[in-house]
Figure 1: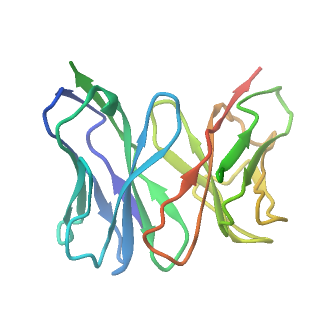
Figure 2: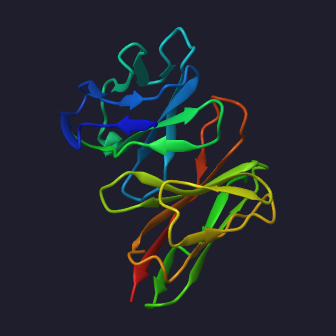
Length: 114
Length: 114
């Protein structure tokens, strides 16, 4: 069965430092996609970055990058030069390319200290 | 502007009452989803639909029902059989068949028991 695991319930980081949020996944599929979302306290879900299982390069979007290690089944989100506005819940999600179902991890609450 | 509209933003349910949460999208997306989020937790999939007049159970479908009579609409009914319905409910949609398309989310409905 598919499963997403985020082992860090909460993290505190000093402003301007880089931070890595962990995500491991379990699937027997060869083709799948991995997503990261940000959820501020207001509740909306904001899409950050996507990584396909066959993508040879790690995905990057501005200050966000994804450290994809396929053999380890990990897809960690790296935020460079953190800002106060980065304080939020962060969720890792996975989709099997053969299906429409998408499942989420339990999330990591990131708090940025000024 | 294209997007997903969830209504109402806040909803209160009496014991033994069914309530329906509305989700409408004008993004022309085929796939739609309902998730439940408990405080400090991740998103759990209730139901999803890949096409009109078709839907599948997610991981926590018991006590919920859906319909998909129109492409734009995917209402969720929380029945009296759902004994612990207090949660934040998020609706999402996406274009299926393309691996890298993220889900677009509505702003959510907070359901509470009176």
